[in-house]
Length: 115
Image (cartoon, rainbow, N blue to C red; front, side, top):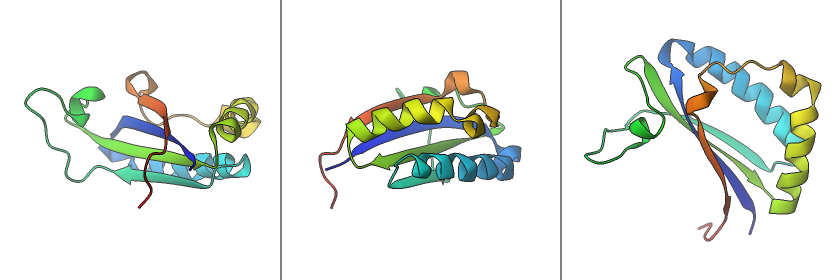
């Protein structure tokens, strides 16, 4: 089984196309450094919860949309080596986040099931 990096963020709804352009560039970089697949999903049906929700996790504002993304890697070792290269890559350093990165939630996950 592989390894997954998961990301949740709130993107200004008016910046959907700007986010898509950013995501395409970032995906190309991750794939160049070993990612198998990069998926970005624009929130469509993201309800508020009674205790917690995806919206509250990223402190979503009324004019923002929740984005859920993941990067699939062949292994954690490949992922760790790739992140070091991606962070040093001049193309990545030149990219500007089209959202408030301080409210981004992310983590790495061992795959348990791929059905």
